[in-house]
Length: 263
Length: 264
Image 1 (cartoon, each protein chain N blue to C red):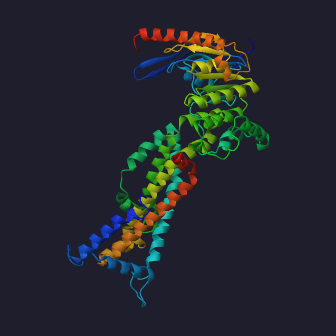
Image 2 (image 1 turned 135 degrees about the vertical axis):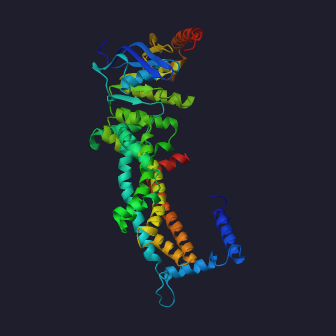
Image 3 (image 1 turned 90 degrees about the vertical axis):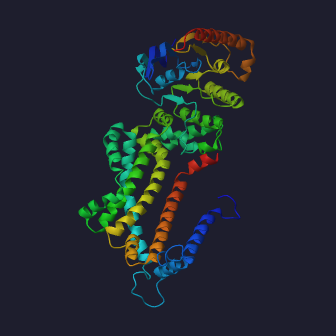
């Protein structure tokens, strides 16, 4: 395996709250190769967003190391682009100003990022919406902006925290295909958080199935479906085999969780 | 504003005017205490446009001058307050350390009514404009500072993270994320502040200076001109309303993105 872009080694994360300490993540080892699309699949509350926040540099592990290109992550960085679940666009900026926020902040000349922005607008289907404000956009369109403003920074890893989780089923499919086409064009490291089994299998090369509280990586599974993929992939026999396997793992996990006393 | 055919907002004022008219006409109150609506209107007219013959009365043709005195004081005091309160509010809202140092003092001084400061202001600044400016500025300062710091503190964590993830440093975060995000609150503070400023100017002019609407109000009371008192009250109310509308309109222009949000 080539030098990983993202490398988590023995990561523990605890939160101290009103009712004592809560172990969110326990002994996480996870490496993402430069062109690898990794999905982390788990039930809500398993700490998968916490995991992403640590890679992003929003949060630090209690124990263990989070490395990016061999360096300890200490703060957010444009080389690790984050797409949030609720898009998190700046409501006072137009679509175009949201997308150019990163390059402008970094002092990049308009002549340099201009063509890139132009190509991106085309690629994510935002042409004609440049002057709209986020409030005028649907959920799916907002998330296109969220993706474009990160891609314009040409990050080395894309961190996506259930980016399509709040979209309706149809829009979600459209966005998944969009992400696939973006990824095929520029194969890069992706860490994609989701609780949707089909989404994980459709998009990723590797799926990490997590356990609930404390969050651990139960199984790492290679998705050997051919690339390039489209939504068609979800109807193939191999896809269904993989899906059955993952669902089995999840069912096993929820049975175990049900047997344990509530903590 | 509801139905287009009946201007609903007129119902209450017309009703009040009717009660006022009847109260005087039917002698519900002792004669001479409250002037009739028509008398107030006539005195107000004369106060604005002057009497047909040359008059030395202080209530003839002096309205504009007094409005300008009061208006200028309100504007200056209000701007002074905004210039100090907005930056301070931003730092208090943004920096926990600054908040711990400054916030308790603001909360301690805030309950002191502006009227309670009057003797202090006159002792320190004398019967001059500076006294009025101090009182108006102080009164407007609190709502602007407090609302600004609340607005800053309420900045969405995700937006801060998004900005930092895109490479923004503290300065960019403050100017491009925190400030625009706090603007709606800041405008709320400004609207409350201009209201307090009009209260403060009347109090200050009653006692601490010798011109303006507040001075006229108190003076007219002493010489038994209740008609001028009532006309002054309406004048202040009108000016307060207009200045509030100016700020409201300005906020609608600056916060266009927000009006879109509400219609979405």
